[in-house]
Image (tube, rainbow, N blue to C red; front, top):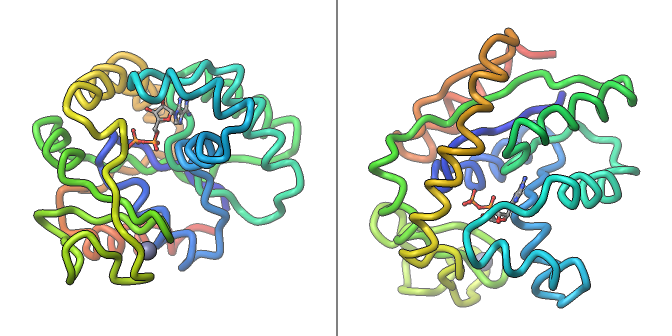
Length: 214
Ligand code: ADP
Ligand code: ZN
């Protein structure tokens, strides 16, 4: 089974992808996490993408596809895409690539949250520096301030969760990613989920939605 999660930055894709990939035995593919990991290791790819990410702009399609294809060439599990595709060009490249491997997308899930909620969610987001677990200082704080419940490491605010960059990311989503909804809506595999519910309730809805799938 191969699944795509779509939605605004801050719609909960990363949070849900972590739960779903564990429950369904899928490999979680977060292009954002891949780029941040390369950035952290200061690899040539990391240096190349740094400027785009800190400005809240998209990494060029060609680079995204190269990185994905090389990372996924030996992966045999089903894939759960989080943050990819992000442009119609990426969706077309994914179709061509999967077509050449005899694979298909089984479900596209749109995590629907109002645009007006996104900025406050991103501003309140904290990420664990150890295990990557995602918190929200208002709706889902850790037991001890700024410390991860799961692994005890400190939490951080992502550079691109700063207010100026958040506004740009929302605009980039509206301009370049929102058209993907129309791209997939007619495909028969498109599902909408209410992303404004609590994370556990969203996860339950998604698992129920997908349990009818092969
Ligand atoms: P979010 O969904 O919260 O915006 P991500 O972690 O998915 O965060 O992405 C962070 C940044 O990484 C994006 O703003 C963009 O610069 C880059 N990025 C991630 N995925 C892609 C992609 N598929 N295409 C282009 N750029 C991407
Ligand atoms: Zn942690």
